[in-house]
Amino acid sequence: MKNFLLAFLLFLLWAFFALWFHNTVSHKNCDSCKIGFLFNCDSISKTGEEVEKAKKNVTTENVKTAFSITDIDGNSIFNFPNKFIINSKDGTVNIPDAITGFKDSIYYYLNKNQTKELLLRAKYLSTEVMGSNNWGMSRTEFLKNILIKYGINGDKIITEAIESDYKYDVNGTNSDAITILFRDISEERVANIEAGITNKTLYSNFGEAEFKPDRTLQGYTIELKNYLQKYTGKTVTITGHTDNIGDATGNQKLGLQRANQVKTYLASQGIASEILSATSKGETAPVATNDTDEGRSLNRRIEIIVN
Image 1 (cartoon, rainbow, N blue to C red):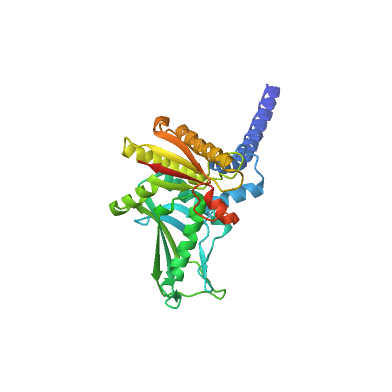
Image 2: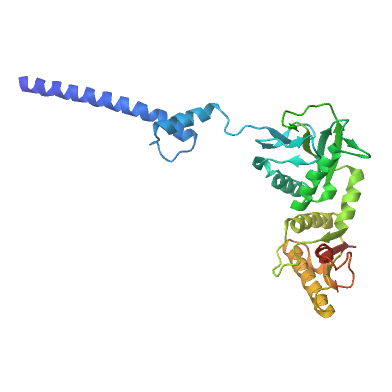
């Protein structure tokens, strides 16, 4: 009996120690586990430094919003960690590396929302006026040209300059002068935009050996498809043009090849092939001189007419 009591006492001591050890260790791991699940961690074996960093991230923003592209009511659609910066020397706009993705955001938003347009606003001082122009308008046109080069339809970009009273900092810069927002296209402007869709000129890398639809062609295809769904019974004529490098017969064939490439792409995107036709004018209808690289690049083009 005495041996039994001694053994039982030892068992109780061992059980108490085991329970204390388990509670202490599991409690420490529990804090790590909570943080780990909060951040979708794959393991609870975080180091103390990682746990403290995770805790800090719970109460602070990883990326602070400095600039927002909004709708007409001021609701944020896209947020960015930096602002556009103007300067006191000219009408250009500095775009920090952290927000260069604004082009991509605008491009895909307008493609997805065909009834929307983009409004660019920029402030200017009364001293920043040059004849009929001002630096506010120069700043909006600067941004508009960047967006057009990226592949966005310029007909869907409106620019406004607002005279304001603001100050430049010691570096001659200001980061509160640019506003970008989306709004509905007015009925008055729909006709202008649709006119551009029915008479389009494209320069989609047609000088390259391999055809690759660029963002301009991709965005235009979405607009054209939307237009053809709205106005049934239309036909689309695609005409290829070249510069005068090489012989006329070869350029005629090259123009037709490029037109057929665009036709094939349009059909692949859901536009009925039976309403598409491809033709070529080769080098016979230049819009610029063929004596310069710039002129020749303008002559290498595709014209699309919707009737």
